[in-house]
Image 1 (cartoon, one colour):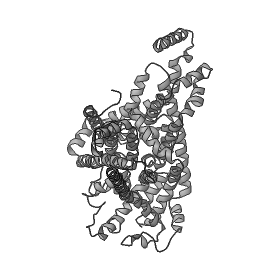
Image 2 (cartoon, one colour):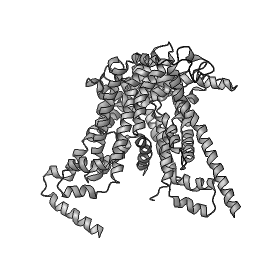
Image 3 (cartoon, chains in turn green, red):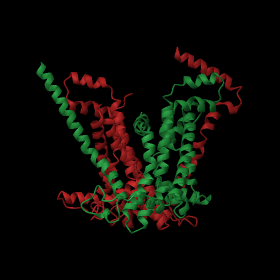
Image 4 (cartoon, chains in turn orange, blue):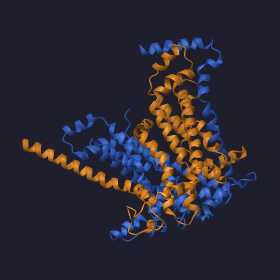
Length: 287
Length: 312
């Protein structure tokens, strides 16, 4: 009996060891590219192309970062991107809370129809609507502005609306009914009762919409490509490597890093919301 | 008890409704909060769908008003245009290389990391890290790694004595190269599966253990069936997303070499904003749309046989 128990324990130890080994083996390709980005950004122009690959540069060139910043006109583009991303974030939260609240708390005619329309509209491939939308934004004089990036966020993206509606259907109605009896208006219920109960959802939407706007490449490419002073960082970084054939990879990587850095900082501050949110939100969307 | 209470309540509400001014009715209040969608849905869905469908039957240079041309665009795309067919082919190839491996890898990593061990959280962060790198930054980074003569990947291959690959210059390799970039971001998928795994009731495993089932049997007969809804959802979104690849082509390959990464979306973009053939681009977009719809319906139909839902 004792021997069997010991055997079992040894077995378990071995399993754990194998698991750790596998985790490390798969983990290496996950971090290597990011580390490569970092070392390359610190190399000089010659060391960049040295073969075999050099993981620790002979000399560290921190000036690459200042040069990279200049190359992408960093501060201007950073502020552009930040401006757009913050507005997109605010718009997404307000509009999806509002529509999600309507769909989950009011019994009005057509509620089901609207819900299915919203779900259905998630299926539409973006490219189908791009040409007409391009015509629309150009017609109203919004070409060359950030409006095509910002306005849609304020008009309730289908996915966020769907998530909010699903999330709110798990929030007990007794809270808002109690507030209603106390004479609160619907707007007060939404902002003072419902919204505080939705903190994880709001955090998730804030992060994902900010990240979405920060990463968005196609919309700025379509609408502000002709106005370099309106470029976002994504556009500036992409154009930098496409536009110059000088192959200054150390500078490209430095620019890549400064573009990535704000998101990385956000990630480490709100890590749990990034990682847990993704899983639970998507899982709740399935049900 | 509950039912009668609710009925009483709604009766009272009905009785009151007669006295209520219309702006206090539930319908009006509900629609007030619906305003973002009431504007957004017609503007971003109805109008563009109808207009692009109409334009797909027109000659439209984006400047002059669209002129009716019948099925000319569709006829050209489906019979004469050599690029569209090629781009459909590579788009499907790309999705087929990508999506299944992404699902399997995501699930495998989730199972691997679904154990309370010291330091496991750090590894979850490491696995998740690539998904937060902005797409443009990730693509440029990998473009550098994939360089034929001086790239990291070929350098490593050479060091261990393997032949090098022209990752972005060989038309047989470019889709694999782009897929590697996709697989690198498997961490997001992994987190979704991980939360799915953690929501499987532990009793099920315990019951299975009592019956003497081993690790694989547990995985095969409990884990897989319990997470089929998530698996299915990821399959659908993966397919829909995979068929709409654009940024990869736009940022690093430019559709090449010899159209080997000329995805449909990239082709549509080029047709519209490069060649100013907006009508033809709309027709291409509608063909893609119809393909995606048909595929989604087929996957949904098939899913009824193997997706397990808790509440049914």
